[in-house]
Length: 261
Image (tube, rainbow, N blue to C red; front, side):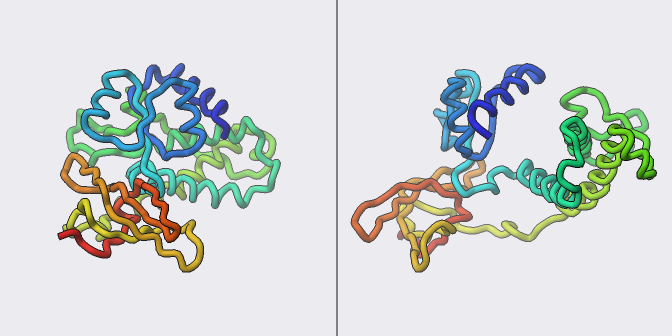
């Protein structure tokens, strides 16, 4: 997607949803280019007074640090589940068998399914039977239930809307089963660990380096979150030819070698 295409998508979103105050995203090249043309403040590191100043100025665009999809948190998990379901469905469909109208309508149905998920436990109050969902927050209306699509193959081939409903039913079954698994508790990151500190010597986990390369550096700056935990840091890496470079990396991509004393 080019920057121009993204700008058009952004304008369509604003035209429907209204003015945006804050955007969070990965640091894609199309996103970075779009911020220049839209005159939106783009920041690489969210930190104290800078964040407050940009917020008071209007629209704020927050980028995750490089190589840190885990900073996406909830939305990255939903993207991963949704992508796996769509891949498993669409790879089995012959090329050219879905028209643009069918595919666009199907993706709208898939979006409604994802946004209808409950955010809180179902209330026992009979006057409050509907759990809070993203769709309810966005539209103030519950997602309407639909009838099951017919299984007759001839009906699916003759009617596009029946084909869309059949695809939506398949997506619902697969997405529901995979999404429920993501609600289980994981043991990862359940134990307290020492925060990275200025002066620590670390090893960078970089998949793009050449064979037998072990980029090591020293932490020169840390960025504590609101809860006091350091989830990203700025590292100064010295190379063999004498030059050095600065990188902002998430803590999950840094291996502590020597603690600063």
